[in-house]
Image 1 (cartoon, rainbow, N blue to C red):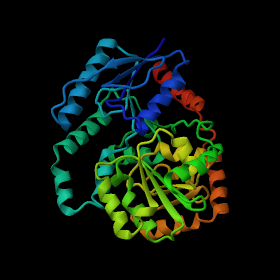
Image 2 (spheres, helix red, strand yellow):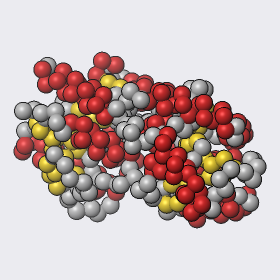
Image 3 (cartoon, rainbow, N blue to C red):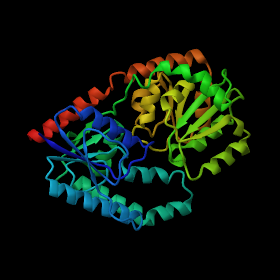
Image 4 (cartoon, helix red, strand yellow):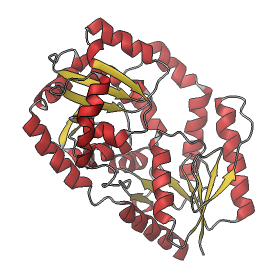
Length: 373
Protein backbone atom coordinates (compact mmCIF):
# COMPACT_ATOMS: atom_id res chain seq x y z
CA UNK A 1 0.00 0.00 0.00
CA UNK A 2 1.51 3.39 -0.99
CA UNK A 3 2.22 5.61 2.00
CA UNK A 4 1.40 9.28 1.55
CA UNK A 5 2.20 12.11 3.97
CA UNK A 6 0.40 15.45 3.82
CA UNK A 7 2.07 18.38 5.57
CA UNK A 8 0.13 21.41 6.78
CA UNK A 9 1.36 23.41 9.75
CA UNK A 10 -1.81 24.83 11.26
CA UNK A 11 -5.51 24.10 11.15
CA UNK A 12 -7.93 27.02 10.93
CA UNK A 13 -11.62 26.10 10.65
CA UNK A 14 -12.28 28.81 8.05
CA UNK A 15 -9.05 28.23 6.11
CA UNK A 16 -9.24 27.40 2.41
CA UNK A 17 -6.19 25.11 2.45
CA UNK A 18 -7.55 23.23 5.45
CA UNK A 19 -10.87 22.69 3.69
CA UNK A 20 -9.00 21.37 0.66
CA UNK A 21 -7.05 18.92 2.83
CA UNK A 22 -10.22 17.81 4.63
CA UNK A 23 -11.92 17.14 1.30
CA UNK A 24 -8.84 15.43 -0.12
CA UNK A 25 -8.56 13.18 2.95
CA UNK A 26 -12.23 12.29 2.65
CA UNK A 27 -11.95 11.66 -1.07
CA UNK A 28 -8.85 9.47 -0.68
CA UNK A 29 -10.01 7.56 2.39
CA UNK A 30 -11.27 4.59 0.34
CA UNK A 31 -8.49 4.66 -2.25
CA UNK A 32 -6.07 2.14 -0.82
CA UNK A 33 -3.52 4.83 0.02
CA UNK A 34 -2.18 5.01 3.59
CA UNK A 35 -2.81 8.59 4.64
CA UNK A 36 -0.69 10.45 7.18
CA UNK A 37 -1.10 14.07 8.23
CA UNK A 38 1.86 15.96 9.70
CA UNK A 39 0.64 19.04 11.54
CA UNK A 40 0.88 21.03 14.74
CA UNK A 41 -2.77 20.29 15.51
CA UNK A 42 -5.91 19.13 13.72
CA UNK A 43 -9.52 19.26 14.81
CA UNK A 44 -10.99 16.44 12.77
CA UNK A 45 -10.73 12.66 12.80
CA UNK A 46 -10.98 10.21 9.95
CA UNK A 47 -9.32 7.38 8.12
CA UNK A 48 -5.86 8.88 8.46
CA UNK A 49 -3.05 9.03 11.01
CA UNK A 50 -2.07 12.35 12.59
CA UNK A 51 1.62 12.82 13.33
CA UNK A 52 2.06 15.71 15.75
CA UNK A 53 4.79 18.14 14.77
CA UNK A 54 4.71 21.00 17.23
CA UNK A 55 8.16 22.42 18.02
CA UNK A 56 8.37 25.53 20.25
CA UNK A 57 7.61 28.89 18.65
CA UNK A 58 9.92 31.84 19.35
CA UNK A 59 8.78 34.10 16.52
CA UNK A 60 7.41 33.95 12.97
CA UNK A 61 10.67 32.82 11.37
CA UNK A 62 11.34 30.29 14.12
CA UNK A 63 7.80 28.96 13.73
CA UNK A 64 8.29 28.27 10.02
CA UNK A 65 11.86 26.99 10.15
CA UNK A 66 11.42 24.69 13.18
CA UNK A 67 8.25 23.15 11.78
CA UNK A 68 9.85 22.56 8.37
CA UNK A 69 12.92 20.91 9.88
CA UNK A 70 10.96 18.66 12.24
CA UNK A 71 8.39 17.73 9.58
CA UNK A 72 11.13 16.59 7.20
CA UNK A 73 12.80 14.69 10.04
CA UNK A 74 9.53 12.78 10.58
CA UNK A 75 9.34 12.04 6.85
CA UNK A 76 12.86 10.64 6.83
CA UNK A 77 12.08 8.41 9.82
CA UNK A 78 8.84 7.14 8.27
CA UNK A 79 10.21 6.67 4.72
CA UNK A 80 6.98 7.70 3.02
CA UNK A 81 6.55 6.93 -0.67
CA UNK A 82 5.32 10.47 -1.33
CA UNK A 83 5.44 13.64 0.75
CA UNK A 84 2.91 16.25 -0.29
CA UNK A 85 3.58 19.53 1.45
CA UNK A 86 1.19 22.44 1.68
CA UNK A 87 4.01 24.51 3.14
CA UNK A 88 7.13 25.80 1.40
CA UNK A 89 9.50 23.07 2.61
CA UNK A 90 12.60 22.12 0.60
CA UNK A 91 12.87 18.35 0.25
CA UNK A 92 9.21 17.48 -0.31
CA UNK A 93 8.46 15.34 -3.36
CA UNK A 94 5.14 17.04 -4.13
CA UNK A 95 4.09 20.61 -3.35
CA UNK A 96 0.58 21.98 -3.49
CA UNK A 97 0.79 25.70 -4.17
CA UNK A 98 -2.50 26.49 -2.49
CA UNK A 99 -1.13 29.75 -1.10
CA UNK A 100 0.22 30.83 -4.47
CA UNK A 101 3.63 32.33 -5.17
CA UNK A 102 4.97 34.50 -2.36
CA UNK A 103 7.15 36.55 -4.72
CA UNK A 104 4.07 37.42 -6.75
CA UNK A 105 2.11 38.40 -3.63
CA UNK A 106 4.89 40.72 -2.44
CA UNK A 107 5.08 42.36 -5.88
CA UNK A 108 1.32 42.98 -5.78
CA UNK A 109 1.42 44.36 -2.22
CA UNK A 110 3.73 47.12 -3.40
CA UNK A 111 0.85 48.45 -5.51
CA UNK A 112 -1.26 49.41 -2.51
CA UNK A 113 1.06 49.63 0.51
CA UNK A 114 2.33 53.03 1.66
CA UNK A 115 6.00 53.60 0.85
CA UNK A 116 7.20 53.05 4.43
CA UNK A 117 5.51 49.64 4.54
CA UNK A 118 7.08 48.72 1.21
CA UNK A 119 10.47 49.43 2.76
CA UNK A 120 9.61 47.32 5.79
CA UNK A 121 8.52 44.49 3.49
CA UNK A 122 11.86 44.52 1.70
CA UNK A 123 13.79 44.07 4.96
CA UNK A 124 11.36 41.83 6.81
CA UNK A 125 13.11 38.73 8.18
CA UNK A 126 9.90 36.75 7.76
CA UNK A 127 9.39 37.63 4.10
CA UNK A 128 13.06 37.00 3.36
CA UNK A 129 12.80 33.59 5.00
CA UNK A 130 9.68 32.65 3.01
CA UNK A 131 11.25 33.82 -0.27
CA UNK A 132 14.38 31.78 0.49
CA UNK A 133 12.36 28.67 1.38
CA UNK A 134 10.19 29.07 -1.72
CA UNK A 135 13.21 29.38 -4.02
CA UNK A 136 15.04 26.49 -2.33
CA UNK A 137 11.99 24.25 -2.61
CA UNK A 138 11.39 24.93 -6.30
CA UNK A 139 15.08 24.38 -7.07
CA UNK A 140 15.39 21.19 -4.96
CA UNK A 141 16.01 18.09 -7.08
CA UNK A 142 13.69 16.05 -4.82
CA UNK A 143 10.66 18.09 -5.94
CA UNK A 144 8.98 15.93 -8.57
CA UNK A 145 5.68 17.71 -9.11
CA UNK A 146 3.65 20.76 -8.15
CA UNK A 147 -0.14 20.88 -7.82
CA UNK A 148 -1.76 24.24 -8.59
CA UNK A 149 -5.41 25.08 -8.09
CA UNK A 150 -5.41 27.52 -11.01
CA UNK A 151 -3.62 28.16 -14.28
CA UNK A 152 -2.82 31.62 -12.93
CA UNK A 153 -0.53 30.14 -10.28
CA UNK A 154 1.00 27.72 -12.78
CA UNK A 155 1.96 30.64 -15.01
CA UNK A 156 3.41 32.51 -12.02
CA UNK A 157 5.63 29.57 -11.01
CA UNK A 158 6.95 29.27 -14.55
CA UNK A 159 7.54 33.04 -14.72
CA UNK A 160 9.33 33.43 -11.38
CA UNK A 161 11.12 30.08 -11.06
CA UNK A 162 11.32 28.65 -14.60
CA UNK A 163 9.99 25.28 -13.45
CA UNK A 164 9.28 22.98 -16.43
CA UNK A 165 5.61 23.06 -17.38
CA UNK A 166 5.54 19.24 -17.44
CA UNK A 167 6.05 19.15 -13.65
CA UNK A 168 3.14 21.48 -12.86
CA UNK A 169 -0.36 20.01 -12.66
CA UNK A 170 -3.53 22.11 -12.41
CA UNK A 171 -6.13 20.33 -10.28
CA UNK A 172 -9.09 22.44 -9.25
CA UNK A 173 -10.41 21.96 -5.73
CA UNK A 174 -13.36 19.64 -5.26
CA UNK A 175 -16.74 20.94 -4.15
CA UNK A 176 -19.76 19.13 -2.68
CA UNK A 177 -22.56 20.35 -4.91
CA UNK A 178 -25.16 18.74 -2.67
CA UNK A 179 -24.02 20.57 0.44
CA UNK A 180 -23.68 23.83 -1.50
CA UNK A 181 -26.88 23.89 -3.50
CA UNK A 182 -29.45 26.48 -4.64
CA UNK A 183 -32.02 24.74 -2.44
CA UNK A 184 -30.35 26.48 0.52
CA UNK A 185 -32.32 29.57 -0.50
CA UNK A 186 -34.98 28.18 1.80
CA UNK A 187 -32.94 29.71 4.65
CA UNK A 188 -33.12 33.18 3.14
CA UNK A 189 -36.21 34.57 4.96
CA UNK A 190 -35.18 33.32 8.40
CA UNK A 191 -31.54 34.45 8.21
CA UNK A 192 -32.39 37.83 6.77
CA UNK A 193 -34.94 38.41 9.50
CA UNK A 194 -32.35 37.47 12.16
CA UNK A 195 -29.78 39.87 10.70
CA UNK A 196 -32.19 42.73 9.98
CA UNK A 197 -31.69 42.58 6.21
CA UNK A 198 -34.81 43.41 4.18
CA UNK A 199 -36.16 40.50 2.14
CA UNK A 200 -36.28 42.65 -1.00
CA UNK A 201 -32.73 44.00 -0.65
CA UNK A 202 -29.90 42.90 -2.92
CA UNK A 203 -27.44 41.19 -0.60
CA UNK A 204 -23.78 40.70 -1.50
CA UNK A 205 -21.76 38.20 0.52
CA UNK A 206 -18.06 38.70 1.29
CA UNK A 207 -16.34 35.62 2.73
CA UNK A 208 -12.74 35.52 3.85
CA UNK A 209 -10.45 36.30 6.76
CA UNK A 210 -7.62 38.73 6.11
CA UNK A 211 -9.61 41.76 5.00
CA UNK A 212 -6.68 43.69 3.51
CA UNK A 213 -5.68 40.99 1.04
CA UNK A 214 -9.29 40.11 0.27
CA UNK A 215 -9.85 43.83 -0.44
CA UNK A 216 -12.86 44.47 1.77
CA UNK A 217 -12.16 48.21 1.69
CA UNK A 218 -12.94 48.36 -2.04
CA UNK A 219 -16.24 46.56 -1.48
CA UNK A 220 -17.30 49.00 1.24
CA UNK A 221 -16.32 51.94 -0.99
CA UNK A 222 -18.37 50.47 -3.85
CA UNK A 223 -21.33 49.93 -1.53
CA UNK A 224 -21.22 53.65 -0.76
CA UNK A 225 -22.00 54.34 -4.42
CA UNK A 226 -25.09 52.11 -4.48
CA UNK A 227 -28.62 52.79 -3.35
CA UNK A 228 -30.14 51.94 0.02
CA UNK A 229 -31.56 48.63 -1.22
CA UNK A 230 -28.08 47.09 -1.36
CA UNK A 231 -26.57 45.35 1.65
CA UNK A 232 -23.26 43.59 2.39
CA UNK A 233 -22.74 40.63 4.74
CA UNK A 234 -19.12 40.04 5.77
CA UNK A 235 -18.10 36.59 6.97
CA UNK A 236 -14.62 36.19 8.45
CA UNK A 237 -12.36 37.71 11.04
CA UNK A 238 -9.60 40.28 11.07
CA UNK A 239 -7.75 42.09 13.82
CA UNK A 240 -8.39 45.34 11.92
CA UNK A 241 -12.17 44.89 11.71
CA UNK A 242 -12.84 48.15 13.56
CA UNK A 243 -10.95 50.05 10.87
CA UNK A 244 -13.38 48.73 8.25
CA UNK A 245 -16.36 49.45 10.47
CA UNK A 246 -15.16 53.05 10.79
CA UNK A 247 -14.79 53.22 7.02
CA UNK A 248 -18.40 52.10 6.64
CA UNK A 249 -19.49 54.74 9.17
CA UNK A 250 -17.63 57.49 7.32
CA UNK A 251 -19.41 56.52 4.10
CA UNK A 252 -22.77 56.31 5.83
CA UNK A 253 -23.27 52.63 5.01
CA UNK A 254 -22.72 51.10 8.46
CA UNK A 255 -26.39 50.06 8.66
CA UNK A 256 -25.96 48.14 5.41
CA UNK A 257 -22.68 46.43 6.40
CA UNK A 258 -23.23 43.34 8.51
CA UNK A 259 -20.08 41.91 10.14
CA UNK A 260 -20.94 38.30 11.00
CA UNK A 261 -17.55 36.97 12.15
CA UNK A 262 -16.56 33.35 11.52
CA UNK A 263 -19.62 31.21 10.81
CA UNK A 264 -20.18 27.48 10.53
CA UNK A 265 -23.40 27.77 8.47
CA UNK A 266 -21.88 28.85 5.16
CA UNK A 267 -24.26 26.84 2.92
CA UNK A 268 -27.22 28.65 4.47
CA UNK A 269 -25.47 32.03 4.19
CA UNK A 270 -24.93 31.50 0.46
CA UNK A 271 -28.63 30.71 0.24
CA UNK A 272 -29.38 34.03 1.93
CA UNK A 273 -27.31 36.06 -0.57
CA UNK A 274 -27.77 37.21 -4.14
CA UNK A 275 -24.08 37.23 -5.16
CA UNK A 276 -20.56 36.75 -3.85
CA UNK A 277 -18.16 39.70 -4.04
CA UNK A 278 -14.44 39.08 -3.55
CA UNK A 279 -12.20 41.57 -5.42
CA UNK A 280 -9.08 40.13 -3.80
CA UNK A 281 -5.63 41.58 -4.31
CA UNK A 282 -4.28 38.06 -4.61
CA UNK A 283 -5.85 34.62 -4.27
CA UNK A 284 -4.77 31.45 -6.09
CA UNK A 285 -8.36 30.12 -6.18
CA UNK A 286 -10.58 30.77 -3.16
CA UNK A 287 -12.73 27.81 -2.13
CA UNK A 288 -15.50 30.28 -1.37
CA UNK A 289 -15.82 31.00 -5.08
CA UNK A 290 -16.51 27.32 -5.78
CA UNK A 291 -18.95 27.20 -2.87
CA UNK A 292 -20.83 30.27 -4.07
CA UNK A 293 -20.97 29.02 -7.66
CA UNK A 294 -22.25 25.62 -6.55
CA UNK A 295 -24.88 27.48 -4.51
CA UNK A 296 -26.08 29.18 -7.68
CA UNK A 297 -24.61 32.61 -7.01
CA UNK A 298 -22.89 34.87 -9.54
CA UNK A 299 -19.40 35.91 -8.45
CA UNK A 300 -17.63 39.26 -8.70
CA UNK A 301 -13.89 38.80 -8.32
CA UNK A 302 -10.65 40.38 -9.44
CA UNK A 303 -8.16 39.77 -12.20
CA UNK A 304 -5.71 38.65 -9.47
CA UNK A 305 -7.88 35.67 -8.50
CA UNK A 306 -7.53 32.22 -10.03
CA UNK A 307 -11.31 31.98 -9.75
CA UNK A 308 -11.57 34.24 -12.79
CA UNK A 309 -10.85 31.17 -14.93
CA UNK A 310 -14.32 29.72 -14.32
CA UNK A 311 -16.29 32.94 -14.12
CA UNK A 312 -15.72 35.14 -17.17
CA UNK A 313 -18.62 37.44 -17.99
CA UNK A 314 -21.34 34.77 -18.01
CA UNK A 315 -21.17 33.65 -14.36
CA UNK A 316 -20.36 37.04 -12.82
CA UNK A 317 -17.64 39.53 -13.63
CA UNK A 318 -13.90 40.12 -13.30
CA UNK A 319 -12.60 43.59 -12.41
CA UNK A 320 -9.25 45.13 -11.51
CA UNK A 321 -8.65 45.12 -7.72
CA UNK A 322 -8.37 48.93 -7.66
CA UNK A 323 -11.42 49.68 -9.84
CA UNK A 324 -14.04 50.95 -7.40
CA UNK A 325 -16.33 52.41 -10.06
CA UNK A 326 -16.08 49.20 -12.08
CA UNK A 327 -17.02 47.09 -9.07
CA UNK A 328 -19.91 49.39 -8.17
CA UNK A 329 -21.18 49.12 -11.74
CA UNK A 330 -21.09 45.32 -11.68
CA UNK A 331 -22.81 45.25 -8.29
CA UNK A 332 -25.47 47.60 -9.60
CA UNK A 333 -26.09 45.34 -12.60
CA UNK A 334 -26.73 42.39 -10.27
CA UNK A 335 -29.57 44.28 -8.62
CA UNK A 336 -31.51 42.89 -11.58
CA UNK A 337 -32.75 39.69 -9.91
CA UNK A 338 -33.41 37.90 -13.20
CA UNK A 339 -29.91 38.63 -14.48
CA UNK A 340 -28.37 37.49 -11.19
CA UNK A 341 -30.39 34.26 -11.28
CA UNK A 342 -29.33 33.50 -14.87
CA UNK A 343 -25.67 34.11 -14.07
CA UNK A 344 -25.98 31.98 -10.94
CA UNK A 345 -27.34 29.07 -12.97
CA UNK A 346 -24.39 29.32 -15.34
CA UNK A 347 -22.03 29.49 -12.36
CA UNK A 348 -23.38 26.25 -10.91
CA UNK A 349 -23.14 24.45 -14.25
CA UNK A 350 -19.44 25.31 -14.43
CA UNK A 351 -18.52 23.61 -11.15
CA UNK A 352 -20.86 20.60 -11.04
CA UNK A 353 -18.14 18.35 -12.46
CA UNK A 354 -15.66 19.35 -9.74
CA UNK A 355 -16.80 16.68 -7.32
CA UNK A 356 -14.76 15.13 -4.50
CA UNK A 357 -14.70 11.95 -6.61
CA UNK A 358 -13.14 13.87 -9.51
CA UNK A 359 -10.58 15.41 -7.15
CA UNK A 360 -9.74 11.95 -5.82
CA UNK A 361 -9.40 10.56 -9.34
CA UNK A 362 -7.02 13.30 -10.43
CA UNK A 363 -4.90 13.07 -7.28
CA UNK A 364 -4.68 9.28 -7.49
CA UNK A 365 -3.76 9.55 -11.15
CA UNK A 366 -0.89 11.88 -10.28
CA UNK A 367 0.26 9.73 -7.34
CA UNK A 368 0.22 6.62 -9.54
CA UNK A 369 2.25 8.42 -12.19
CA UNK A 370 4.85 9.56 -9.65
CA UNK A 371 5.10 6.19 -7.93
CA UNK A 372 5.50 4.29 -11.20
CA UNK A 373 8.27 6.59 -12.35
